[in-house]
Image 1: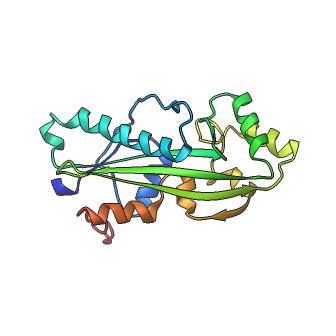
Image 2: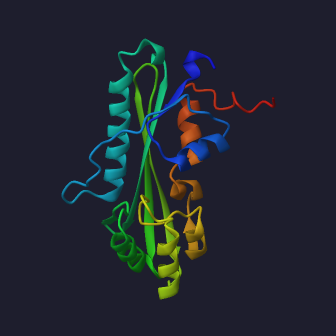
Image 3: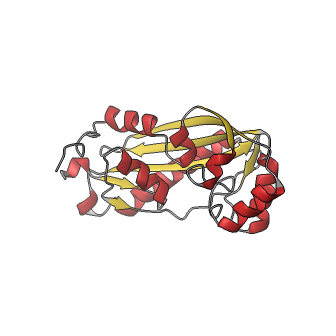
Length: 206
């Protein structure tokens, strides 16, 4: 792969890696960034997604800027936020957090925001926030208990992963499905291509 085509993904999310693979892109390096993801007081979920994606990108850039092997790379970062109105649902780490989130989402609509940030080889930063509206069916006690038992809620914004069992909870979705998974592919490819990254380089057979 030519140096100018190296892509660093500032994330350790298997879902984001899989989505890039789906698009024919193999990140040259994964760099999950450990930053404080707590929202600021009264911060809107859209603003949070934008800020955190930028902070992850900036942190990755700072980590590689003195490493000659990675000069000329593109850095892609993202952050996904799930919200009911202005209420931001945390990435669930404990069962009680997940249960509370699922009870809140039951039978109502919510919005998934993903902020994406691309830092180009000439150090320009490009950002986009993508919004998808999702509505869950009314969840029964058994729905919630069995989903909690599955463990698929761990570490996920809003305590669910749409690509897994929770896909059966979705009554209606307006917008990008891949955005809910964690990386809106259309907007990401548009951003990369617009900044000179060859998004088709991996499409050839063999």
